View 1 (cartoon, rainbow, N blue to C red):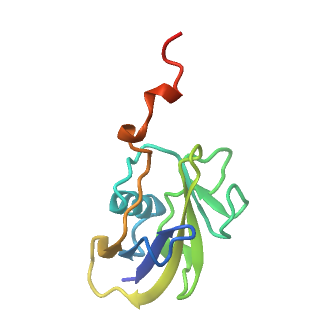
View 2: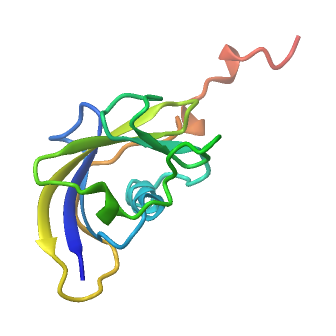
Length: 144
């Protein structure tokens, strides 16, 4: 049937304070994984993204959500990536704000029955965008 993966996902540099543990089938795509990650952090899913297999933005080892000229696509199934326990790769989300999520493969197990992606553990919170309540209108040149 394939593998099922347990992944620890955290914003770069926050592995102890903010993270999600996700279980996802190898039959799911990188697009599905991105959707689960973005939803688990309560982000708005409306931006371009790439999965960086070498943890570097815009490298040759990336799968892109909007590929050009035959570049690798995020429509690939996780199973085809041959992920191994202990491996790290990254989700680069929102090319303007450059959110980087590290993805650590904690477990690779044989999938015995079809399962939907699930959040096993959630710790900490982050904000995708600064709160509008924190803006000081005096800092903006709204009036002349």
